[in-house]
Length: 112
Image 1 (cartoon, rainbow, N blue to C red):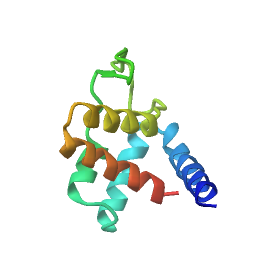
Image 2 (cartoon, helix red, strand yellow; image 1 turned 60 degrees about the horizontal axis):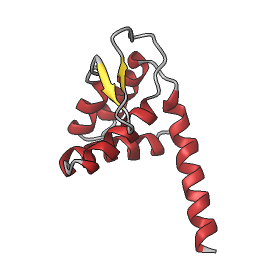
Image 3 (tube, one colour; image 1 turned 30 degrees about the vertical axis):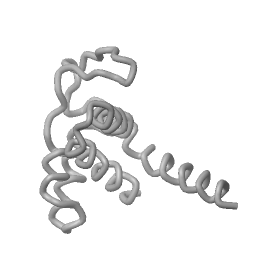
């Protein structure tokens, strides 16, 4: 029974994140701004969501992805990006950053 509940919760979480799996940087900033104004997120989460992405990111396997061609109107998988960043932060022991990314993912899961 507990396993089924955990599976349902994991599925619900994945569904919620899917909204942010194909969203533009402009849309994400708009959502972040509105959510901050409604006091649904704190200043740190707002800052994280409205900061431009780096020109390159590393995935969980150590592969580097070039993001230099990403524009304000390009679709991007923010859900996967923040999941990966949280995982990497935990792996290197940077719990402050991991917590910051966790707040973003919590916001994503509540925003659908």
